[in-house]
Amino acid sequence: MLEIVIGVLTLTFMEIVLGIDNIIFIAIVANKLPKKEQPKARRIGLLFALFARIILLLGITKIMELKEPLFSIPLPSHTIDMSWKDVILLAGGIFLLAKSTLEIHEKTAGKEAQMKAKEGNTLTKIIIQIVLIDIVFSFDSILTAVALVNSVWIMIAAVVISMAIMMFFSGPVADFINKQPTLQILALSFLILIGFMLTIEAFHYEVPKSYLYCAVAFSLIVEMINMRVRKNT
Image (cartoon, rainbow, N blue to C red; front, side, top):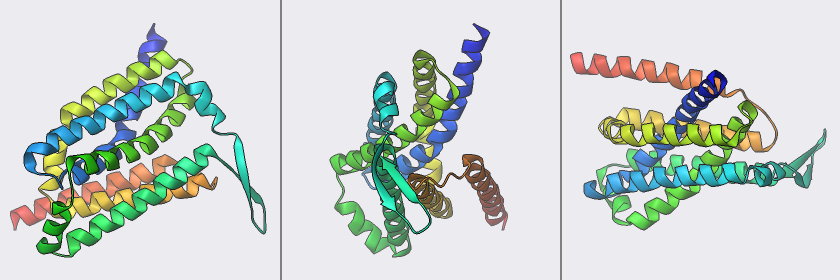
């Protein structure tokens, strides 16, 4: 019983940590909608992430089969065997790189460009973007969870708990991020970094995620200090 509780708590914490980038992406994208539609977009986005993770866990046998080689890319020094997992990570990484870069470009182009960008967005378009990135984040999260715990039901319990916590805090987190322009740019820069990490992982270059999250934590602490200094001056 103790092992089950420890397993659920460990996975819940891991899912929350891995889900921070998902919440950031949802908050920034949903901010393009009218104020009254933003909470709905965030809730639908996180609900889809929950269902996607549960479906992936229930089909975990098929998911593991996605790691089988699909085709090979010959290089001068060696050959890279690409699987469906690698293709999904590559597509998700490129999507994150492109989307985050475009978002930064819009935010640095001035208020007029931002207003034009918002005019072309609807709830359906925003939800489609959220759904696409949810699939990538869910896929990466499930593969990490499988490496830690063997029980599918423990993983499902951890996913449900973590998503409930994220739904509860998604509103305050989104409001905080959207009120701080410099924090938005920092968050988008994190997403570019995550997109780059997913892309190189697709080509079997493994980078410990602890490096990424240490860099994120350090940058966030520095930005918090900057915000305090700006407020005091």
